[in-house]
Length: 409
Image (cartoon, rainbow, N blue to C red; front, side, top):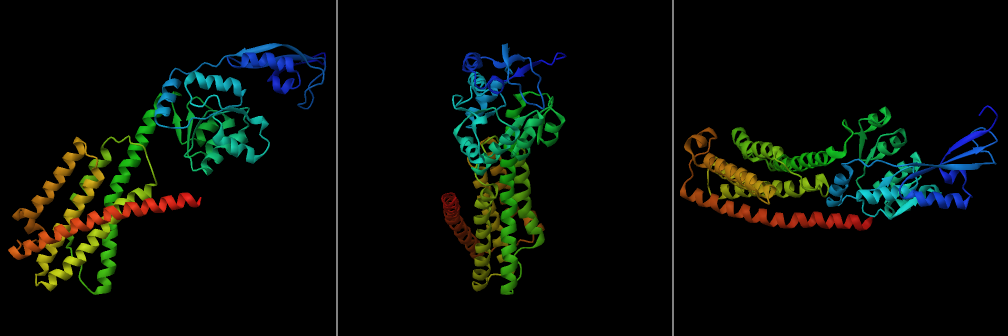
């Protein structure tokens, strides 16, 4: 002021930390309002330091308006078993009361982060508490990093400069369209309408993309596995490749192209679980190994039994198609109407390609003799048994490896 005095507005804990009466009165309002103390002093504020002689004048009570869509979003996140944590620079009692009003689970677990002195204190508090008040921008970053160290996938929403450090470290950062430029620039997702209504749709679309790509990747990787293994093994064994290009194209069209295209478009809001690569390999690896084993078995047995190269190739194509159908059935399970129609359609197309004269002529697959037909049926049964064994073994191996890894951490 012109006369050298000053007027001070701020949190009671910082302006009069030792005045128990003022603090007690402020706590009485804290559950409903954000409480600021207005005070005066005959002395000036110098170099950011408060003067000694401070006289309280009154309180300024601010009420936060809860967004109408906030309760709906919190309810959705609770149903999805998402741990919601509220991080704020305000009084933790006030923030906890707001968290209770919108339905945050564990709202009663709150802490004043100004009492956390070390990085270790912040890390320990990250999982223990739900509501964090009086948080500095650096502590926000520490909380995000602490949760990530506990193998949590962390998404953070923010709209101010104080949130930028934490948003940069989060796995997924969400900024409000009406927020600061800094927040929008570092965010991976910007809610243009500044409404939480969009988040459930964002989560659902993300799940659809990841789950469907995961399913489609199993088809592509299975072919990569058996093609690579056969190329190396047949080169070492000095044997010719068992498929012609047109036959490979037929298997790829109905075993990879059409199924992956249709599966990529279907709705899929199932929760994402496990490692992406582990989930892909869990299905692709048994399939690729099964095709490799059966192809080599058919080639050697067919030669030993005196069948022609074209007959052996035909049996290989049929058996590989059968294994592809097994993989499709594994990926589509549990069946819904769409998946059942896809599985039935692909099975019929494979059958038509192996039985119709025109299709066999295009793929250079001659009609089999009765003896070769029995050989083919025997190999189809063998391939089914091998696939069933591998389907049983590999998921258990992956589960054992994951549990062992979790215990070692």
